[in-house]
Image (tube, rainbow, N blue to C red):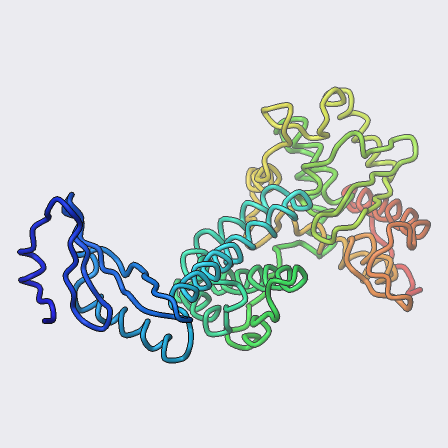
Length: 402
């Protein structure tokens, strides 16, 4: 006679295990301690076998019957339910070991040392906050374009389209890593190339008119902040490197005798060489007397760390400049790029190499630290001299195009 919920609830334990049969091999085993276990008895390959289907009441009578019926369907297809369960469990373990989050963290750990700390922090926080909660537990080989799109739509819905694009890029990087490791077959992200609104690129605020640059340079000379920050401020237009690279500069990378600063560009993952004009060398020599005992050229309040990433922009604001609309620390790059080309008629490829931009050439070289080095040395001194003349208020004579 089939079991009922009432008969199951009213069944009392005895000194020995007892079995209450429901039909089709399903029965409830009641232990002397009162535990109630669903079990299925069946035959496979001529042998009698048993598997557990869960504990009552966590698994109700209805659920137990559904599990029994699923097992019997496997038997009808000559599949042993017990072996099938082992295979499913192994597959679940494998999926967990190859989940998107596991592989993403593995990818992150292998790459974080090549990135600036601020960059790596942004990546892992983006993954933890916007990606892992939604697809982190999913097997990476099973992730589809719709899965990724649902993640991106949530981010986009907050009005942060830029973050959505960055998240898509990070997901794609993880997928490509998984493909290289043989744990996924394809990256679904290229399928979403046009799924998000295009980014509206914002140029960093910059001053590119010589007369206004002259005013800025004079204001910088009059800046009354700390000597370290003022030195960085004066070097910013002379060197026009990325602000993060300037503030993290190390004395070990600066050769004042050879008038050269070499360092590793984290953005392009290349070594970069900055020829130092005589003006830049003079500023650095003065600063070396104060910070030469530190590892960083521009130490912060903690001598073991560089000055704050906000220091240059804060100094510009103290001078009365709006760092959103007039000039920002990054804007010195646009200033140099524009004036070197339009006013000093320097070759674009020489300027781009000095900016450490990837510039493919006939040999396919994206960036070569020594390419145009002689031209760049001449250009950097020409640039420094030009800025001095601007600051002094001299009339600048336009040079003929090369």
